[in-house]
Length: 94
Image (tube, rainbow, N blue to C red; front, side, top):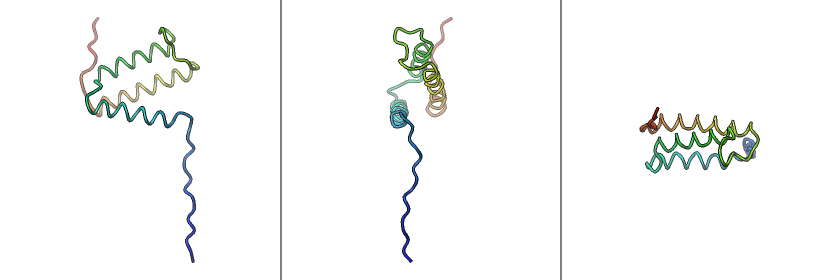
């Protein structure tokens, strides 16, 4: 009896998944090589927050729901990078 190989069902790829994987990996590599500090990542979060809220000179060019999703995702990624690589937080001046 021959074993007929069945094609493996791959999960359906959502638009932008490939880009997201590349960008996540890039941020991790840059953080690992100390090309990007924790402070840099926190500044990036602040910039995305402003753009998602529409209070930037260059608001995110997408629907508000997607902008909010991007903001939330970046905050989760920042928490992961902080736990994985550590580093000093952005100094808050009151």
